[in-house]
Amino acid sequence: MDFIERLQSLSKKIPQIKESLATEEATKNALVMPFLHSVLGYDVFNPTEVIPEFTADTATKKGEKVDYALLKDNEVQILIECKKYGETLSLKHAGQLFRYFSVTNARIAILTNGSVYQFYTDLDAPNKMDEKPFLVFDLEDLDDHAVPEIKKLTKTSFDVESIVDAAGELKYLSQIKKLIGQQFKEPEEDFVKFFASRVYCGVLTPKVKAQFLEITTKALKQFLTDSINDRLKSAMGSDVASPALEVINNKSDPDQNTETKVVTTEEEIEGFNVVKAILRKSVNVKRIVDRDTQSYFGVLLDDNNRKPLCRLHFNGKQKYLGVFDENKKETRIPIESVDDIYEHAEVLINTVSYYDTIGGSGDEVA
Image 1 (cartoon, one colour):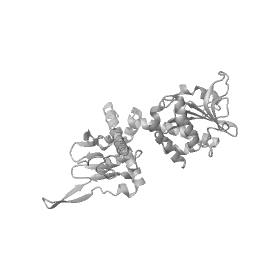
Image 2 (tube, rainbow, N blue to C red):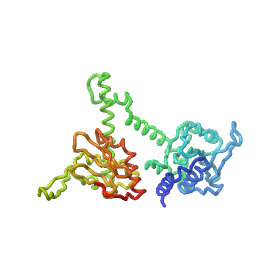
Image 3 (cartoon, rainbow, N blue to C red):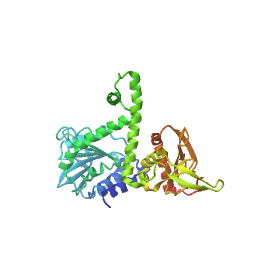
Image 4 (cartoon, rainbow, N blue to C red):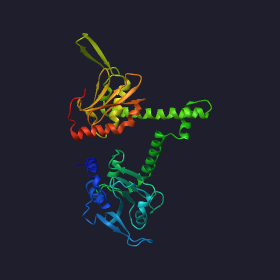
């Protein structure tokens, strides 16, 4: 397996065993050691590469241990402190790492609960571990941007200078991305004023500010949707772009002997792309297929009527998102806009999980 496949393999293992990870030791045995061995390529049974319960006396503490030390050329390069799976990581857990960082040659420190890995170095002051990680990586939510940085820590690729050089940019990049994410969820007053002042020539009274808060929030959601749609179109080529904004399926009506037209609207295509964007981490998007009808726009798994994912009821004044439970019973949820589909991501993901786990057997949905 290549590097990303090894990461994905360990990631897929977590849902199967997480209920059994009640202690730190269980977490280390089931997740951390496989990460060091299978992903990073270190021999966890060779003390010249991996030292468990590593001890290095400090000025203030004697005999204190850190969970693992990774060595290269007989020098400690990486220190690792572990907590049990599911425990929220914080600086209070990193006391040993802070103390050991100054008395070893290590330039990299890792704090982990087996799923989330926080990576630290000494950007702010030499030989003093920073209080903020330069990279946070979650095995249960793999980030394509972080994978190349993790690969730099592998035994065969390890180059501490390269890692530290990249750490500065990574640290501030992650913090800026976090701030942008916060603004998307709940724009701050200064953020709203910045945009309002660029497009509005009048005085920013409290009423105008309130209006622009709503406008800016809506614009951010639409921008995100448009970006996702563009990415999907780029990734899938004509597969996304091919449905014309007006797709006409001719159906013969035996009673009327006339042809009825099913018109797929731009809004339905946009909603379909949002559903695919939500589910792309759970299932290959090529398995998600649209099937439009006169009364609703259907989204199916594997182009199978027995595997309905959702229905978009966009033909009337009130829009509805139709979602399905494990018995394939549809529930219609009123929504104001296509963006509101994101608020129901969990139920869509659960539906895919049900079909792939159980097999989706049952009667065809009418």
